[in-house]
Image 1: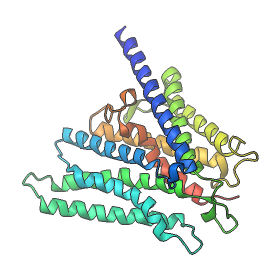
Image 2 (image 1 turned 180 degrees about the vertical axis):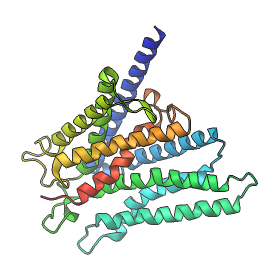
Image 3 (image 1 turned 30 degrees about the vertical axis):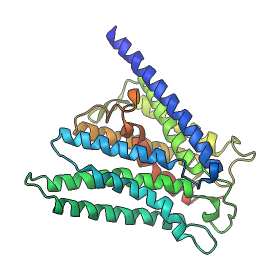
Length: 317
């Protein structure tokens, strides 16, 4: 009886938190897509990314504390946020004579910010060295967190800044795509997560990776890929937004996008399961109720973002 009650409570918490997040994200996406109150592309969504980044760093600090490694969070938090903010803020400094920012050039700002952040972490350990034999452990953990969170989030920002104008000489109007590249990443990955949870919970029998995550099943994985493929077709190939479909498609079309981004999302989910197993915890945190913590929410997006970015940057008509 208690087990059933806990299951219903968890499901109810997941539904409430998910509904709230979807409502808020939809409103911010609309505001960002139309440049509400004069906002530049991405600026309405950046506060969400900052909250998730800081929340993720805080959760890592707590998790590593359980292993006896005390991380210094100041530079780490600033460094993670700086990596993806650099893409948004640095793009205008790298526009070409035609006014178009090359997607690859924009991401070089993230590399610069990452290099500065890593150097700052080294300097911090030198200046604040302790006699606890943990300097290298702290440094290794901090650099891991910096790259695990910061760089994929930079690709998310890069996706928001991709437009038709910089996808090839034959494309000239930057207004066609807008927020769709970023939206395609979120919807395709999260549709896979939802399908995996629903089908895996109801019908899952064959373990997928029992040593990494006993709860994940092959049935859930197949459902996840099916959900990602359907969402990719709905968003990228149907006439949901445009009468004749999108004017350009990511590399390989909706099918390749659904498969590659969907599988990458699953890989990201399994990667976080590995991290949680090594750090001996079930959920990264409880800040999002039944959904767990910030890391549980974004784990699949972190691996899928660079893949989605690559496919969109190489889009074709």
